Length: 295
Image (tube, rainbow, N blue to C red; front, side):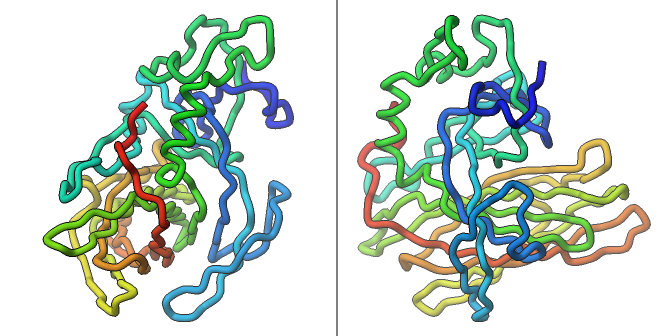
């Protein structure tokens, strides 16, 4: 049974309004949302936030908004194979460690619900992070292990900025995360992961055929990357399945930079158009992980 958003503060379980998966909220994040198409317009009473300056010098005003760190029910992973990756602890290693079934969800995508199941979410971390309390509402509270895990991995979990732009009814949302720095052949290599969601807001199906990235480093280098599809796929965004989400990684030999680009989309009649990926900053922080995402 689903509830209105007005009762959100009393529940943890939710259904994702876009992807339809079952999940549970672990804790909230406050982020700055930079929407190129909806400057300073808010449907959820957000407070005005900071300003992001693009590589071209354009100022984009942000809106402060709530996102949630969530666990995805394993039974729904085939529909949203999302995970959070961490750098390995060993210096010089490019190993990545993934925790599957972790996601970041905007407040408006949350549909709270109640479940009569003793363990409503199937995930190996559910009972390690949460403890049942049937006599209270919400019926689950965070364990000390959840608090310790969040504090230990805060620099690599923290969500600070969200970038969004809509081109011809295709909305692209990008969330970057700093992963840390590693030494490779006496050179510092800085790593980021970025999560991208594409949403088709029209009634016409389109296919993502190509990606085109520009990656600028504060050291002055500009790289261009082209390729077919994304993560080995050419996803179809249709009225039945209008959204697709994936994560990838990028590294620089400098502590900061910017990325931007476009996706080539193809309509059912064969016509193509370029869908813009909004510019976003790659920023590092001073803290470095000591042991990956150990729990």
